[in-house]
Image (cartoon, rainbow, N blue to C red; front, side):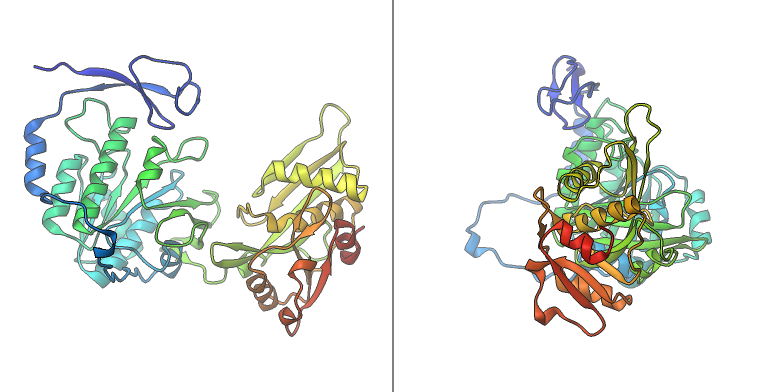
Amino acid sequence: MSKPTTRFVCQECGGESLKWVGKCPYCQAWNSMVEEIEAPPDKSSISNLRRKIDIGIKTPQSLNDVKLLAQERIETGIGEFDRVLGGGIVPGSLVLIGGEPGIGKSTLLLQCADAISNRHGKLLYVSAEESASQVKLRADRLGIHSDNLMLFTETDVNQIANQIYDMKPAACIVDSIQTVYKPDMASAPGSVGQVRESAAQLMYLAKNENIAVFLVGHVTKDGNIAGPRVLEHLVDTVLYLEGERYQKYRILRSVKNRFGSTQELGMFEMREEGMVEVDNPSQILLSERPENSSGSIVVPSVEGTRPLMVELQALVTPGSGFGAPRRMTSGVDSRRVSLLMAVLEKRAGLHTNTWDVFVNIAGGVTIEEPAVDLGIAASLASSFRNLPIPTTWTAVGEVGLSGEIRSVNWIEKRLAEAQKLGFTDCVLAKGNYDSKLIRNGIKLHPVTTILEALDTLGIR
């Protein structure tokens, strides 16, 4: 009889080693190797699964002989959720949804399960963390009473796979991937090997049975989905549910999507009756914006295919004089802010090296695109000079190290969103200026350098 084998697996990349090492030889991460004991496979359980799932023998075929299948997406009816997925659920796709505990992942997916079961037939909801009565309590609170929503409380991935094969539902939701396990592996549920192998088996089933499978994933302290990085590479789509637990707004963001746009964004409001989609996020994010306040400017950003007006706030104040000045950011990259401060000091004479600087995006949104560079620089200069920017003005453009303002993409979408919300003037790169873009109610101010931009905004 074969004995169990011991190996060490990296929690970050899934790399394996026969002995423990302080630094992973594959991804160079420190203290990421964990011990796993792997027992010989249980041949009876594997044979049973093969009897259930038999795909026959496959042979290679010419690319020109492959026939495209016109598969329609499964629309849930929840507009923001369908938008993030690229227009709906693709049959046979494997979707991973991550987020902090208590952020609302189970609530949102239970609402999606109800919508799918009412529109497209049976849906299998696998609860591996909560009991059936706990799920029922949440369903009653959300007003969910669908006869086609089938609840299955199980942690054995073989049993889950067999139920999917027998039922053939429109979709399956597994909550969560960290709590299911393969019985033929000796390691505990949630370990690197268990998460990887369980997800691989569910992917195998989703592709061969053409059934969409949703996996709920917990996140670590760093905000990454727990388990090996190979889990994110394995799935077709990765979604993150973001937001402050004690605030009412939640943002569903797509960071990977093989069937649609990445960096797509959907906004929800957490209420007693569950997640309610927000149709106009820009208006919500700007609803409490103060008027005539220095250090504040609204910039048009594009998340995926959606234009979004967000408020950038900066506070530049004299430092205490003891130690290094503080630099704190929320919603923007702190390294990008430091770079823009250096450009302002060198090209515009704003000496902030001894001042405390705080930059924030109101509403808890995170923006990474360089198109907001000009807005960040303008908010810093506005706070430093204590000169407010007119509330009906906006700015968009990338700032280079020489102080030049570079053009950005999707300029028509940005201007249309700004115009819709009542903005009258926009400072933009000269490369983006086109007489065809001039719209009724919004005036364009093309600039080439950061000094011109600050002069135009009246904050130099």
